[in-house]
Amino acid sequence: TSPDGGKEAGKPKIIQGVIDLTFHHAAGAVLRKVLQEEGYDVEQIVLPHEAMYKEQEKGKVDLLLGWLEGSHGPYLDSYRDKTLVLNRFYEPYCYWGVPDYVPETAVSVISDLAKPDVAAKFEKTIQGITPGAGISRFSKEAVEVYGRRGFEFLTCKQSPKECFDAFEDGVAKDKWLVIPHYHPQYLHSKYKIRELADPRNVMRGRVKDDCSPILLRSSVESGRIRQNTV
Image (tube, rainbow, N blue to C red):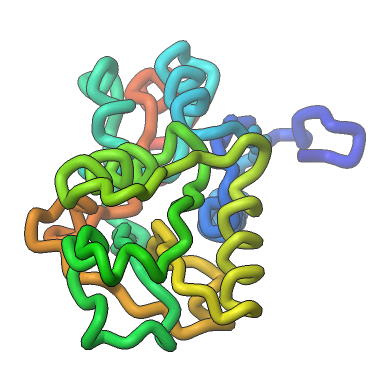
C-alpha cells in the first residue's frame, strides 16, 4: 500500500490473507510481489488458520494461500463453491519426526513410540503449533491411532515458536523427543530431522497437499481481480 496507508493512485486494491506461520509469510511475500508487478495495491492481513478462512468466507479477504486438501480443506468446505483454486505454488506435507541422533533401529515408525522400552526414553509432551493447523488435528489423531503410552500432544498457548523452541532446547540437551513437523520449515536448514513412517497415513503425507492461491469468485466477477490475472 502507499506510505499513508491509502490506495495507490490508479491501482485496484485487493486484500491478501496471510496465515500466521513463517512459511506462509514467505510464500505470501512472493505472491504479493507478483500481484504488485501485475499492478495491484496489495494490503495484507495476518491471522491464524481458521480465523483467516472465516474472514474470507465473510468476503473480507480476496485471496490467500492455502494447503489443500488435507490440511485446510475442512476450513474451505463451507464456502468452496464461492472460490477459485489456482495452480499450486509448492507441495507441502506434514509428518512426525525425531532428531537424527535417535537410532532408527529403535524408532522408525510412529507405532514404535508405543513400545514400553522406547516410550520410557522419550519426552512425553509432544509440543505442537497452533490449534487450528491441520498438523495439530492430525497429531491428535496420531496419539489415538498409534497408542498413547503416556504421550500427550499439546498445542501452543501463544505462538508456534513454542513448538520450535521446545525442539531446539531438547536437541541441545540430547533429549529423545517427537516434533510434529512439516515441509517447508526453517528448522530443516539447522537440524537433521528424521521422518517417522506413517503406515496409517494419519499425517496425510502419502498424497502431498498443494499450496495454492484461493480466490473469491466475487472478487473476480466484480472486476477487482482481473480475469487475465487469474
